[in-house]
Image 1 (cartoon, helix red, strand yellow):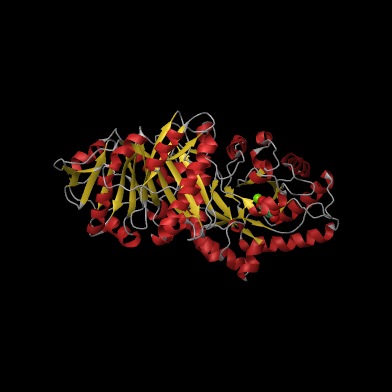
Image 2 (image 1 turned 135 degrees about the vertical axis):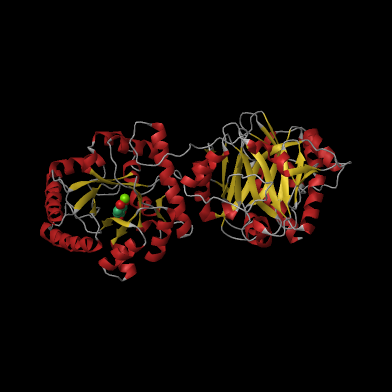
Length: 622
Ligand SMILES: O=C(O)c1ccc(O)c(O)c1
Ligand SMILES: [Mg+2]
């Protein structure tokens, strides 16, 4: 399967676009007339530049309005000029979009005539023309009408360009595509969009998103296209007004999204003939096997103190590295104080921070192979003779994601690589059972890409984006979780250091995990144990509880228990309950949360987020 991306999907110099597209794995680029204006180079220079980067010019997209314009002779003269350009570019296909000009005339047969004339001229030079119906076009905004025109024009150098946005944004069913002969579909473009009512021209220019980011049924569209036997290129055609990630990241995200979708199509319809190497399916996540902190010796002492207060005890140390394992029930926290290597670099860069997350999956090597097939970078480090080769890839903020499983020798890693420490006396277990969720922070413009990353690798449901109230600026939040809740991740996207999460991101120079939430079955009992350690809870103001009591009609004694332990509370419409308790931050960095879910509560206490944020902010302005 060949992939391509339209040049207009990002804004940057052509050289930077080409380098990013090639590095991400794309085969081709769709050059637009605007590239000439930006670049000030001739078409043959641009063609050479593209090929020097190892890419093909998949097509050339022109602003020329044809078919259906009143002055047909003029349109054909202008077409010849475009054919000169595309010959010089050495591109095989000219994309003509269905016009939206107010003067365009419509008329199926008249347009078929125009396109037949155009196709004859293209064919004379060995070129082809692709006609693209557009959602905002004046007459041809339905692919079935476009197909009728192409069918009537009846010229082998004329075919359709089908763009998922233009088909789906109008709510058209893509099933009719299955009846179009594959050889008349010259190119296919993919873009998602939000299901928000707005002018379609406006939407097309500014709200075309990564496949999977929006609400359009792209999988249904792609399955219909592939069912025809179409074996041409799959292109990405994004346009976004909101701030985008770097060109490099957008290219990686785009490639991953495109290949993830193609993979989903062949899994849904195994008879589809997709020329794409096989790779493993999305992985189930069984649990968080460990979380690894990097901390120098001093920092490790203060982190250790905090962990002891939470009921963790050091249970083992690594055989050959300065690495300690802390544990409480099923929660494993690794503290890495090595003076060299990856963890050390992360410590220098971000301070005490989480540098590595270990996930238990059914097949660790398969999970890493899928990630790699989708463009993730494998992570390797030099191993000591007694260390196991644990599959790993790079994740958010350059952090590392390790995969463990129970079917291979990897399940023995703790015994193989660690020696037990004598039992520490005096540590009171606080009833923390497992990791409920991890909370990552990232730049706002990187949130869609990282949400796509996790959703592409793992069998997770993606909750829609929500806003978090923070007086400092916009914070958007997205949660990902397995169906059974065994793995949960929340992501906050921020764009200013004036927000609480944004300050974490800038203070830590881009560390990713801001907090870890542990689950307890009985938060009041946990709070009682913690009260006997030197644990300090984040103080919650009285006003929160007054508000809460009136929102949920709670008894005085229940509220008094919440107040006494600084516990936050939420309830869903089905009666599911959520309890939350926060630690003070470690330095001005990460913090811990303790939660308890009752009766199927599946959220993250969104109603409490502004109170929590304000409480943390108050600490640092005191
Ligand atoms: O609206 C446009 O200009 C336009 C042009 C080319 C495309 O492929 C497209 O989807 C839209
Ligand atoms: Mg398009």
